[in-house]
Image 1: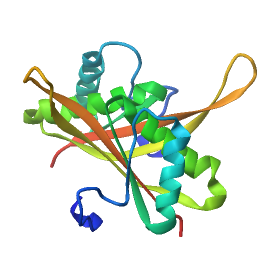
Image 2: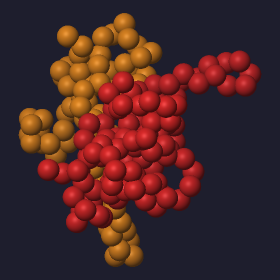
Image 3: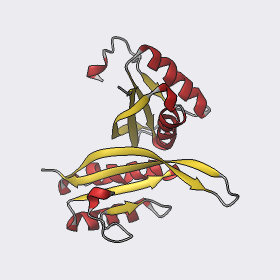
Length: 100
Length: 100
């Protein structure tokens, strides 16, 4: 996060993948890519698959736009559920940038 | 694939994630890591999330073993279904190696 120039609580160059239709996130990422050189697609748990799908749609199906996939990071987040227990949730971060 | 020293149809240092219990793949990966310096965890479609889970279990929960996550690659595979249509399926490859 430190290298993202994040000066608020919500980083401007990240898209969080949730339960909306896939193309919602494709569009959101493309809009951000118009203003930022690098956009990071983030997801956790079962949305990880969808994050990869979004990245692939942007790079393959829209290859005339000229974007490429940069570093992919996987990690673990500790989530505390309401009964006080903690669970580990896998996370993914896929960087998308303009192909030079 | 080319850099994996694959001399048969089944690469020895890859684990394909399917529908079995997660710990099956954790064990399979650990067994291969005993013989190979790098093991690649591969998955496609909805199993992508499970591939990340397997990698995280090996690295975090079993951190006394000293393995680390190497490069993560995402891609697309074209799958032809029985009705003759082709679909794009997202894929992931997570490299696990010994932490130096």
